[in-house]
Every structure is written in structure tokens, then in C-alpha cells.
Length: 382
Image 1 (spheres, helix red, strand yellow):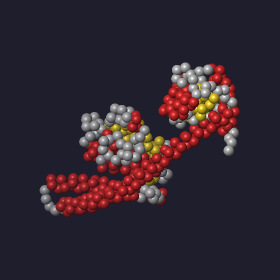
Image 2 (spheres, rainbow, N blue to C red):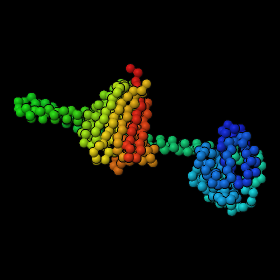
Image 3 (cartoon, rainbow, N blue to C red):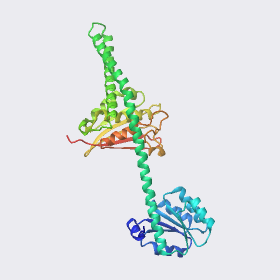
Image 4 (cartoon, rainbow, N blue to C red):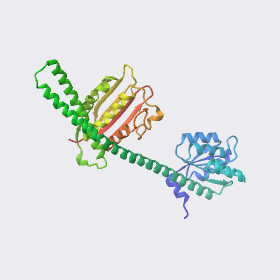
């Protein structure tokens, strides 16, 4: 099948970079190629590498073989290492079989052209390079999507198994807490020392908190087990401020020993979703902040809730060591963790819950300046 290189290139307006230390050749190339392609020119390998750093959309590199300083093969080898998606081609006026072999082996050059070129052949070759570049980019996108699908599939299998493993012991904890509460209530009704009764009352309050926490975790495991069967009818209004207060009560012992809490709830937005899953999000973020803080005075965790237009904005920030830039981009990847212990699933699950509810989660951090997680959710129409 024959292709019309002119039509193909005009549709895409692809960028091609031509490198030659002979200015006349550069001008000739521009005259031939520029009506069809976006043309960049360079007179040396160093100029070409600088142009490639500045332009992320270059599809084809065509370079002369014999140039002062860096030759064409060395240039192609450099580009193959740094920008392998760019299609590399070599052109020379010299018949040199060894140069052709080196160009293919070292620089992964796709074509080897001779000077003087035929304009029609040159345009056809460039159009083939543009199509090859498009296919490379498409393949990279598909590979990324496949890798993401595999990670999410693995995450789903693992979270389902965790749900099964957690639910039974949590049910045992919950039933025993209920039994202990009942026994303490019975003891309180009997005559006795008032100090002892006060102690029993405090124990009942602690057991009530433990019971609430166990029930919340049971709901979370149920939501994990049912996550594969999402039913919009199961969603209900969620008072975000109320969930925050509930989770803070659950974590009061963890936070009070390691950090000062600063809470600002300037709004009471209502979301549409599951209270248990919203609670799981906040629980994960707060535990993440607590675990990130070193043992020192002056630790602070800030929780703020506001409503902007039709969005609820929840922020959880700490003044800990922050996240290194090279790790920041991977912070939500399943099984990736900045801590020495843990599964690396907390933030991945958090992001998935937020997305399932139509929201978005972002993170801002600098080393030694703490971290801030921001969630925006659409407010429910009530």
C-alpha cells in the first residue's frame, strides 16, 4: 500500500530536526520539508541536543554523518539513550558500510540515506518516520494503561483478601466489647464506692469508642468486599464534618502523644457516598501524617474543611520531613511506600475511593517542609 506523505504530514504537522554543519544543506532541507513539516535546524551535535531538550514534540531526527565534533552516529546514540521515542535517521555523501552498521547497532538508526537526496524520496522517508513515531507513542500509552490495569487488578484481589481476613477478628472484637460494656453497666447499678463507679464510667466511654472503631472497620471491610459490585443506589448523604469528628475521636490516643491537632471546620458540606469509605480516607491520611512525624516536640497536624462553590475541600497537613521529589510522583502507586514498614496500599486505596466518589486528591510537599494532602469532592444536591 502506498502512502501520500504530504497528506499524512500536513494532518499532524510533525516536528523534524535536521542536523548538518553545512548551512547550504540546512537551507535546502528547509525549502523541501518546511511546507509539510515543522522544521528545526542545528549545525552541530551539541546544538541538536539542546534543541531536543527544549522541544518535547520532535518526531524525527535526521542527521549528517560527518560533522566537526560530535558525528551523526554519536548524536543518534545520545538521543537513543535520552529520548528513545524519537525516530533517528542518518544521511551522508560517503559510501561507508561500517558507518551504516555502527549507526544501526549503536544509535538504533531506522534509515540510512545518501546525499544528494531526492526530494520526493526524502519526504516519503520523513513521513514514514513520523508514522513510526506515532506508533511508538501509542504503544507506550498502551503499555502504561496495561501496567496500570494490572496494578489495579492486583490491588483489587489483595484488598478483597484483606477484607475477608479482617472481618472475622473484628467481629470477635466488637462482640466482646459489647459484652464488656454490658457487664460494666451491671456493675454500675450495684451500690459501691463513687470513685470506683467513676472509673467504671470512664471505662465504658473508652469501650464505646472502641466499639465504634471496630464497627467502622467492619463497614470498611464490607465496602472492600462489595467494591466490585458498586451500586449507585447504595450511596447516601454523608455529613463530612461529622465523619471528621468521628475519626478524630477514634484517633485521639494516637495523635495526642505525638502531635498537636489544629482543626478548622468552616463548613458542613454533604457528600453522596458511603460514610465508612469517607472515614477510611480520612483515617488513612491522618495515620499517614502521624507515622510521618518524628519523635520530637512541636509536631502539628492540621485538618481543615471548607466549601468553595460546589466543591468540598478537605486538607490534611503536617510539619514533618516531607516527601522527596523523586518519590512524590509515585506516592499513590499501589505497593509503593516511603516508610520502611507497611504494604504501600493506604494511599492507593484512598485515591481509588476518592475517584469512585467523583473527587480528586493532590499532594504538595517539599523536603523538611511537611506534606499537604488536598481532596476536593462534589457537594451533593440535597
